[in-house]
Image (cartoon, rainbow, N blue to C red; front, top):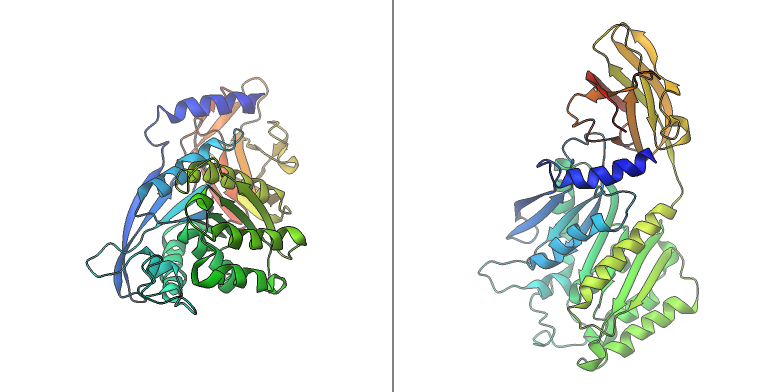
Length: 387
């Protein structure tokens, strides 16, 4: 009940406190691989800076030069899980080239054709630069993100139309690039159904890890001949047998257009992705937690979101005194851990106001135990526990 009350208060507080909102950075990359200047957008969620021991899964959104794709994706995530209103993802917008050179998004997404003519205006192969675009992501964008942001190895790719075709091509040709894929209305027809053929003939058993795939289509059959036939070959392949290493969901939005289906599809795709992530086996890690206190007599109790932390019951798990002003505990914690410190006094239970954290408003401290094994905190003061 306390946690439910906190969630309600937290959502309200998010609207009042300026620091409790997400932030978007624009970063220019002078790409040596593409020999172009590119821009990427990076959305970091509320309390990213304060959550110094939390690492974030990454969502890559293609065609971010059209900001609605990027903005809708990072905005919708916080509405998907009522029990966790804090956005747990960093969202990266991958924009197409916008300079003076004759180069467009299709150049990034398409390979050199085997059957179609390179000058085919419908698909606009242009430079047919898919391989180099993938190198740009792998060699320049991802290393930059690893250097500047606290990210995990989980990477979800979101693409629409030919962007979705590109997302699927990485699943086949570069499976280590992304761990999950949302492909909204992909084009399987180009180059005599090349993508459909590559997908159906691919040996997914060779992949070293399980992948999540969300596929959707809209009313494309009404105006683009051949789209239905090529995509249904892929659907039939997925539905006809258990494809190894692929956990997939297929959605039909034929009541919507090619463009407007994105709104429903990104909502449903992200919801299915979160469900998939939550279904993965829980791993645990040994974590060393140390906290400095202002008074020699201070006792510190820790609580949190799992049994070893007392399942949020305060005053149960006491930290050891290792010096007059230090308390310590070793715990075996699951990766996505939430902790909170109190003085454990039943008559006057107070919460620890931790340095660099907006507590007690920020009810718990999120921890990514897979990446953070040694945690150090400092108590500034003890505050009346309002929960």
